[in-house]
Length: 323
Image 1 (cartoon, rainbow, N blue to C red):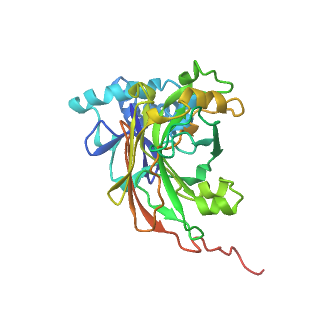
Image 2 (cartoon, rainbow, N blue to C red; image 1 turned 90 degrees about the vertical axis):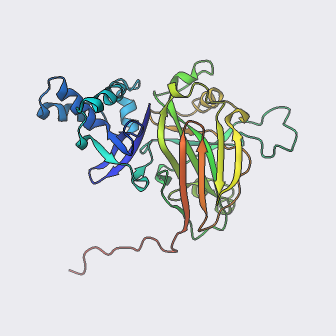
């Protein structure tokens, strides 16, 4: 099952992206309609759908880790299309510009580093290096087709396409043998960094990885049952049509269970949190005007334009005046 976020005048809406061609099916609205067809009055069905189907992925996983209600609605929709029970007011148009990050605003985003070979021409290391990574600001998240904003204070911006693991259950002290049970699903995650800013900050990644739009996610969240082997997915990334990354998640030094076990020795991961697992070789810098495209097998495609950020994007606003 796939879930997307559609930005609307009502706020972000969780939707099914793969059921009605050219449309997104609003999960809450479809659930209310399903309840109506089964005998509930509309005035009861709508508030019930709002209670039982949260509006963001982290909240949804918090209340229903198995996504039981959402799966039931997903199964009901195709038949309802044929009978006319799924009405037009349960769907939204699917313009790319309206897609938001499907993971909402998780509490924790962790990025793994040095988890793939830097150069396939070099001999592989006899033993993998130690696990390492960084916390990424949730405010950096952007939708799958949003512009990538190139900061005015940087001259080296590097996007890296990675497989993101979405946590389904509150987790601490996971064991490697059972860690995958904590995984709800996956997303394509473009982890962007301003390397020169990190160098200025004594190689700390906080600011360099935390700029607005430096965490491009999507186009949808894919449940774990649709990805039987997350360690065998093709990862490809293009800049202006030039293929720069052509790798596979099979190249990871440290697999997902090892990453989750190591990370939860220190952190409690909450439902909806994301662990971005590192990137295959081929990463190079981009410039304003570049067009980027990333694709992870079975995970969909992200497409973005790199745009120069104004030197003063947010002017201070004076409130009030002299009394």
